[in-house]
Each structure stands twice: as C-alpha cells, then as structure tokens.
Image (cartoon, rainbow, N blue to C red; front, side, top):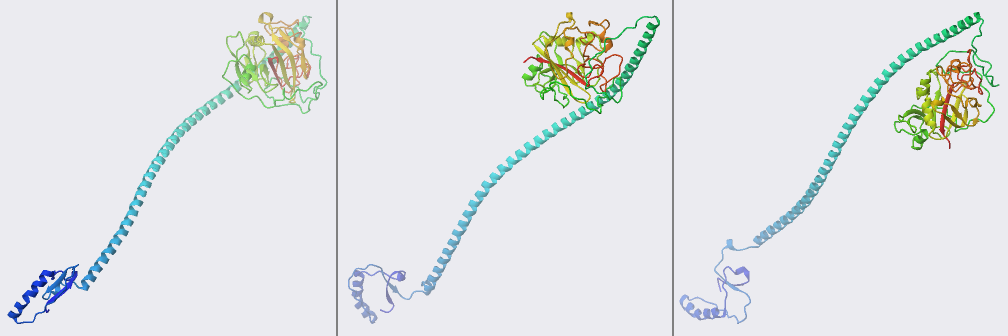
Length: 480
C-alpha cells in the first residue's frame, strides 16, 4: 500500500504502530467505505494469525531525513567510542605511571627519613668528636704548661747546682789548704819535739799485706781529694787467686737508676721486693722498734736482690771524716755516697739474722767481693761492736781482724791503738790497731796514692794499704 511500510525491529520504532489481530480485522471492515468515498484502490493484506514475537511498525508518511540514523552516524558513534576507549586506556597508563610515581615517592620519603636519621647520627658523632678534641687540646695545654714549669724548675735547679759546684770547689780548695797547713803544723810539732829531745808521736803500724798483683808502673802519685773518677791505669791488673764473682752477684755494669718509691714503709728491702718492688732505688724502711722510717737504697738486681745498702763510696763527693754523732745518725746522699748510721744499722740488723756483702771495684773496672755469713752490731752502750760470721769471696778477708771491735771516731777513741786510729786513717771504723781495712777513709783518684799514713779507702788483702778503691758498697740481707 502506497505510503505504508511494515517494519520490524528497532529501525522503525519511531513511526510504527504495533499491529494486532483486532486492528487488522477493523481495517478490513473499513475498506469498502473508504473505497466508496474516495473511489481509490485499496489493498488489504491478509496476515495469517501467528504469534508475534516482536514489534511491527508501520510508517505513516515519509520520515524526516534529519531524524534518520545513518551508517555514518553509527560509524561516528563507533569512532567516538573507540576514541573514548583509547583515552580510557591512556588514562589507565597514566594512572599506572602515577601509581609507580607515588610508590617511588613513598620510597624516596622513607629513604629521606633514613638519611635524616643518619645525618643526625653523624652530626652527634661529629659533635662528640669536637668535644673530645677540645678536651684533648685542654689536656695538651695543661701538659705543656706542666712541661714549661718543669723546664723552668730544672733550669733553676741546674743554676743552683752550678752554684753549689762552685761553692764545693771553693770548700775543696779550703780543705786542701787546711791539709797542707795541718801537714806543716805536724812537721813543726815534730821539729819542736826533736829540739826537746823527745820522741815524736808515731803513727799506727803500716799494713804489711801487699799483694803481688798490685800495679807497679804508676804514671804519677796523687794525694789530692778529687771528684774525677774517669782516670785509670794503662796497665790491666792481674786476677787474684780464689773463686770469681758469680754472674748474679757482682756483674752489674749499668749504673743504678735514680728511682724513688713512696710506698711503704717496709721492714727491710727484702720485704719491699716481696711486695713487688723489683727495681733498685730508694725505699722507706722502718725496722722494728723504730718510730720514724728512714731512706735506704735497696739493691734488687744482684744475687736475687733484697740487699740493704748501709754504706756507699763512689766519687768522693761526701766527707767521711766526721764525729761520733754524725756516724750514729748517718749522713750523705742516698743515691750517691752515704753512711746509713750506726743506730739504723743496729736496729735493722736485730730484726732477723743478716749477712754482709762488701762489693769492691778497682780503677781498672774489676769488681770483687767479700761475703760474711752473719752480721750485726751491738748497742751504743757497747760502742756498736762489730759481730761477723765466716768469710767467703774473691777479694780476700780484710775484715775478720776487726771482728769484735768497737766503732771509733775522731772524738771517741775505742780502738786498741795507743793513739786514735780515726785521726791517722781520716775516718770512722771498727779499728783494731789500726787494722786491715779502712772503707770510710779518704777517696783518692787513680788507685795508688802517696800519703804519710794509710788514710785511703783500702782493703789490705786486695791492693794493700796504699791503693784506694774506686767504689765500695756494704750491703746486708736476711739469711736465706
């Protein structure tokens, strides 16, 4: 039928009307009427009755082209959808990238926090190091100040020492002059006595023991008191018969170090050694029944150590021609020449059973020794009488003849001689009449000396009475 279009589907939904069984029958009934009025041909479509599953559209009249959906529109829509899909995919990529960036930012923030913590830690360490360096610089400055003070003090002491050396030289010159004057007066007295036909006072009998190995070719004789102990003889002395010193007894070639320990006091040097003090030096010793401690040089490096040095001669720096009170209380320098004191030796020796070691060194550098199995002194009421045991060593026995004798000084004569042995031998000792040893005599340089009397530091069995030893030490230690 012209102008009528049956359509099915969604393409004609806008201008179609659904046809049912009743509507078709009504159209058939109205057909003759229309034919008679309009006198036009009409068509009737008979559609068998069937089940309609979808809409049937009939378009009335021609539709407007602007409302028709064409393939171009569909293609445009599809292009738009494709474009939107691409944009969505791009957005997804952007979202993924942004997510990665966010994760990286989180990691960076975490690393930044770690770095901040590490920087803070390093800053604290740097601050601590700066503080430590500052403290070290302060300590260094204090140490430099102490060094400067010590240097100034040492310079002051050096200047004082030079002054004392000058005074000592002057006093030595005075002593020498007085010695010359005394000799002159003695000669004058002898002349006076000879004029009166009186016998002049005779000195003690000279020591008759003259060992065969004493040097006979001597450059010159010297009877001056000097401090230079570096001179010797060109000819080496022979060795004496007898056992030589053991390696642990006298072979100590290095000089004693200046060492002082403020610990203690100890009963003796052996107790100091047992307390862990194995270095030779000055120690505070307080024997039993003694109120005040005294300083003693402890020799810890020979013969197992523990030796109390009671007498030391080495350079003539101390005058040993002294009175009874001086020999009783002691005198000298502990790290040089000194005498411990008769009272100190007496109180030290009555604590235990002690033995005596006498160490002798000649001017050729040879060391010998004399050891006595026991040693002690009797009290002052007995004149500090000497008590000795048996002898052993390689220096010869020049002290046994003094055993049992009292101590004699210039102002207290207790020897067996008619005169005063201390006057002739210029020292204090346990003289007999007068004896075979004089370790507190005058320190002569060079060994063999020339004097009217035997007043040097001699040990008759080693060198004779006119050979003055270079160094002497007397030491005591408890008997093992």
